[in-house]
Length: 336
Ligand code: ADE
Ligand code: ZN
Image 1 (cartoon, rainbow, N blue to C red):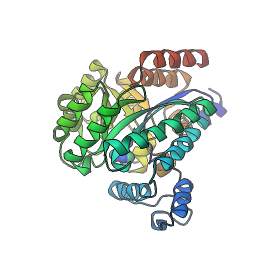
Image 2 (cartoon, helix red, strand yellow):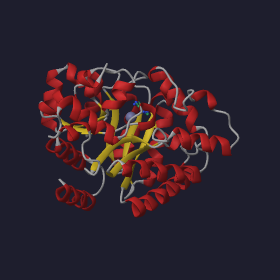
Image 3 (tube, rainbow, N blue to C red):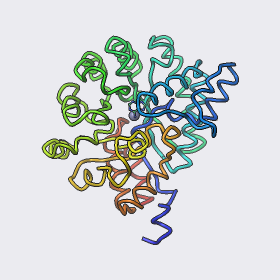
Image 4 (cartoon, protein in one colour):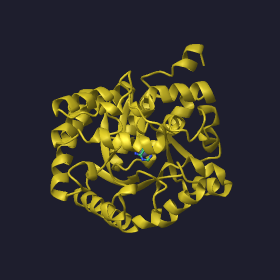
């Protein structure tokens, strides 16, 4: 590897992201523009330089939810989707799964959700045409909003399951309740044929990851990195080929790990766990996919071989149909 490559992995390496939150990917300027149009004052969520301002995970969730208050109409979500995909495509992302929360799109009402979803799909279709990036939606409940809201969200997911909505997930405060509280929602989503993931092992330890697999029967875990604290679980994940949606920049920004050097992604990869790399909520964590790649190269010496491995892991675990996976694999084989 040349010195140049150590600092800057080629931006044109095609990338696949499985773990992004559509609202969390909104640039501060985009949110400020909507606030201006709607004459809403949310200036308190920005620092002097205009970045999102928060300290720690719970305040991050509050600022995140405050930012979503200016995302009011389906048209706002169409514009957001186009803007998020443009940024991702500039970082070489060719396929992205994004968490969509009906709770922020008309209060998890199926009728309203259908309108928001159509608008999001319009934005995604325009981005695919303009920037060559494909997107799929993973309908996502918010853990600290509770199991009853999650049921409504699962019904929204089941009613709209298809070519675009291909998965179901859960984000929010991992310290609220238990994975099993959301059994009904996950059973509903599974019966609708959706792929399943949940945030686990970001804030709580290995037991949370076990609960996610045993109780909710997910095939992917959002984060999951704290499984490293239990080697039997690590072996189990590797054997079962459970894919981790690892977001190193997010984990460091929120203080799960002190720095990238102490992050377990390379150890997990070396133990045979199917790891992938995503940005989670890029502007909140001052990251991009290109920066994630640069950090992994600089810290762990990852090169094209490693990036090909994690990108193929991501395609294998993606919730899209086989024809889309085949097309992505072909693009990757041509590029790597
Ligand atoms: N929602 C958005 N980002 C999240 C994260 N990192 N963990 C849990 N919920 C989230
Ligand atoms: Zn997340």
